[in-house]
Image (cartoon, rainbow, N blue to C red; front, side, top):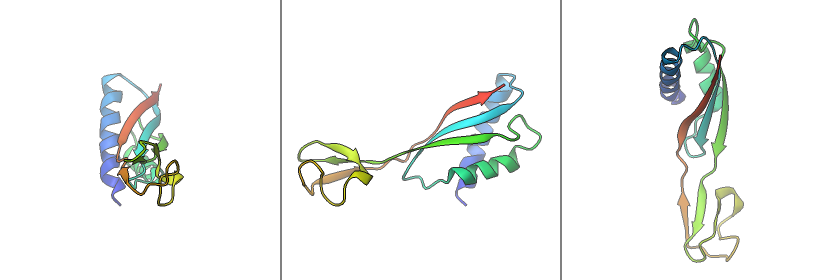
Length: 113
């Protein structure tokens, strides 16, 4: 349910840009979503379908890319995605790790007519 607030943000942002640029139809919104956000792109798209009736966004599609969090080894400096290891650095086997959580949520681009 927390997708509703972020969807309203995306809708208002894209609608404002569409109006400012005399866009008749927004076809697709490209999002970058950090894996620590827990947003589900399909739910965002569903909410957009409801919000966008009778607007230039009606029927808009969402193309979302999920960006992985990274882990940095404090001993050897290796950086890797959090999915590339179990409990130790894959390069030096150190346990001295720092998780860099990816909480990004970015409207990267808009495809429109």
